[in-house]
Amino acid sequence: MSICPKNKSSKARRDKRRANWKMSAPNLVKCSKCGALMMPHRVCKACGAYNKREIVSVD
Image 1 (tube, rainbow, N blue to C red):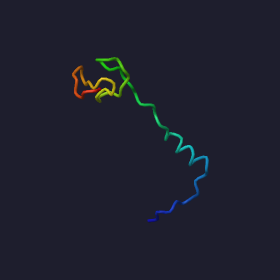
Image 2 (image 1 turned 45 degrees about the vertical axis):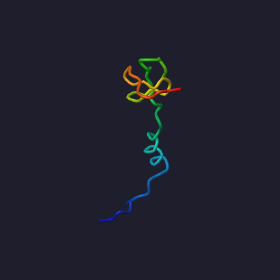
Image 3 (image 1 turned 120 degrees about the horizontal axis):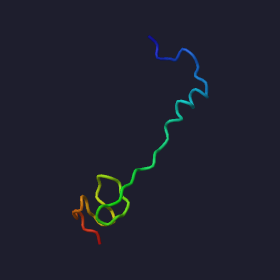
Image 4 (image 1 turned 135 degrees about the vertical axis):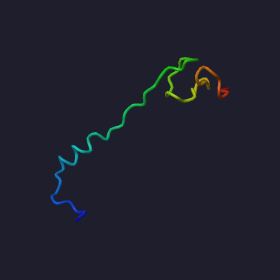
């Protein structure tokens, strides 16, 4: 059994395989308390609330 590839992969075939490695934009939702955009299931950075309750005090 050999680890080395049997044949050379062309640049086109290699780059086709790597074409799907793109970053996706983070999905954002509106905060239920202040309406600012935030990542889901996280404490809001603008008001410090999670699930309409204040978790962190923001100055």
